[in-house]
Image (cartoon, rainbow, N blue to C red; front, side):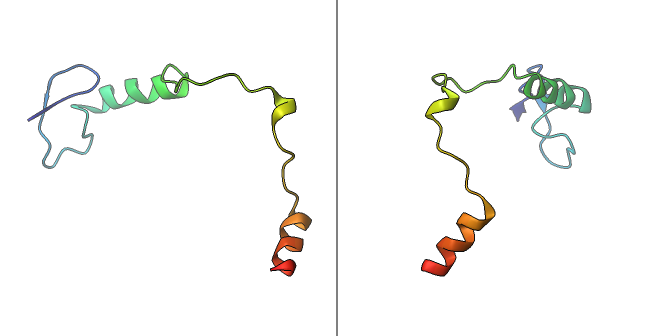
Length: 67
């Protein structure tokens, strides 16, 4: 038997519509942490000027014609 990642209670896996959580409440608590950006992947800050220019639709069409 697994543990609920939110509250740690044992979770019945089979026929559990909220798995891996024990309840809808625990599922929503976890979802709120994602939407409020409490869960984050560490990384360095990116300066917008370092980012490549986005492709326009015409760039994509031109690449297709060259192939």
